[in-house]
Length: 128
Image (cartoon, rainbow, N blue to C red; front, side, top):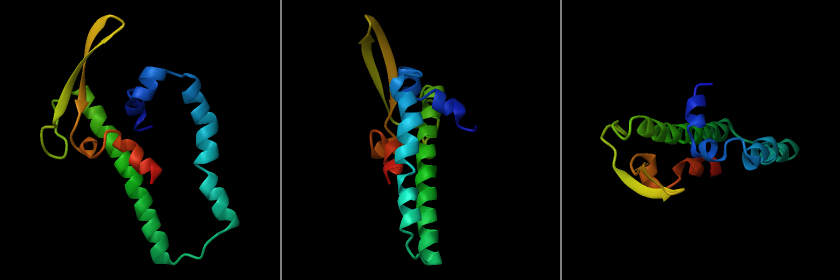
């Protein structure tokens, strides 16, 4: 599990722990929704040329890779407190100060790399 520590440091796990939504999503939503396309295609298989199949494979690979890479950028950024390189340069960041339960806190927000394109870029390749 190459990405296990990255996932354990994600906000989903840090905030919700093993809450109802995480467990329900992993046990019900992902198996039902993420496989629905495969169920449809087994009953209605289209004729694809080798070039079309290759294009679909490459697009899928790029989506999976960009999802991983965006999460990896955020993980490295947080582990180094912003003292790292994203796409070959020092990343831009926002220092967010807030109060939670009466305690003043500070958090770094990455606004460079994939995260410059969209606030939650890692969801974009999942949708595609």
